[in-house]
Structure formats: C-alpha cells, structure tokens
Image (cartoon, rainbow over all chains, first blue to last red; front, side):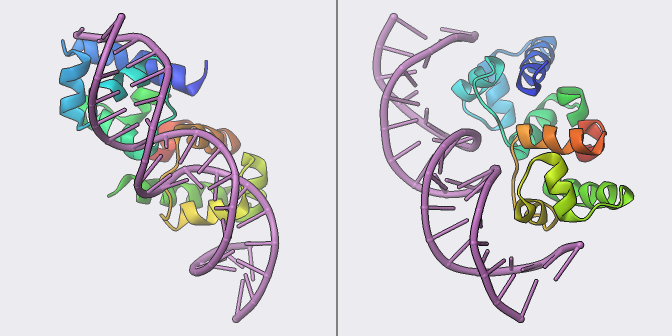
Length: 67
Length: 67
DNA sequence: TTGTGACTGCGAGTCCGTG
DNA sequence: ACACGGACTCGCAGTCACA
C-alpha cells in the first residue's frame, strides 16, 4: 500500500476515534479544513512538518501514522 | 528537537552504519546528491514520498527515521 | 459535515558548479 | 567526500466558493 494511502487510513481512523469532525481536527492541528479533507482522500503529498502537526494533534507517534 | 533535526541525525547515523557516502546513498534512494546533503544539514522539509524512499533505501521503518 | 476545482506564492527537488 | 551557491521547474502549502 502506498504511503499516502496508509496515512489517509490512519488519519481517518485516529480522528474518528477521537470523535472529531475534519473541521475540529483541522483546528487542533492548525491546518485548513479542506486540507485535512485532501489528506484523507489521498490527494496530497504532505511534508514532514505537516506530519509532525498531525501526529501532535492526535497524540501519536509518527510511526503510527506512516509505518 | 525539531523534526528536521531528528531526521538529519538519524539519516547520517544510518547512512554511515551502511558505510555509504552521501552520493552512494543518494543513488540507492533515487535522489540527487545535493539533496541528501541538504537533508543532513537540516536545510529542507521533505515530503513523505521522499521519506518513503529514504527509509526504503536504508531498510528501516519510517518511525526509525522520524520518531 | 465533507468533497472538489481553482487559484497564487513559495519551497521541494534537480542540476550545474566551486573550494 | 562533503558543504555550499545559483538557477531552474514543478508541485506543495494554504485558502476560497460551491455542491
């Protein structure tokens, strides 16, 4: 499975486990609502600074998002 | 420690453990030699597709590069 | 609440060099 | 073998309106 697909699935799973909408999650991570939507649809190839924000907001290690 | 710094240190350590020069490593990862140099000097903010290539060439999980 | 097309600015990523 | 610079292209970062 492609790395973008792994990120997308982990993102959606972990976000929903927190009971967050994309918009709430985007706010927590300091990102735009539509950008989070793009990530979950595998439409972006984010940089590691974005990955860092995502993992921070979810309280998980980066490996849990990408490995 | 900043995520770019963590990547830089892990990259250099793992690359040297393989006995590779930056140029040899760049070739293995399918990247440019100057770009690998930039990464080890914390001068770039790579995308996850690049991270995937780096981890693949080194034979480690992404978490070992970034966590 | 989420998906999607479109947009601009800037940085990712490559290639040429030099010390 | 590596750091560092200039110049270039292309794609990401970040946002909006609308369905």
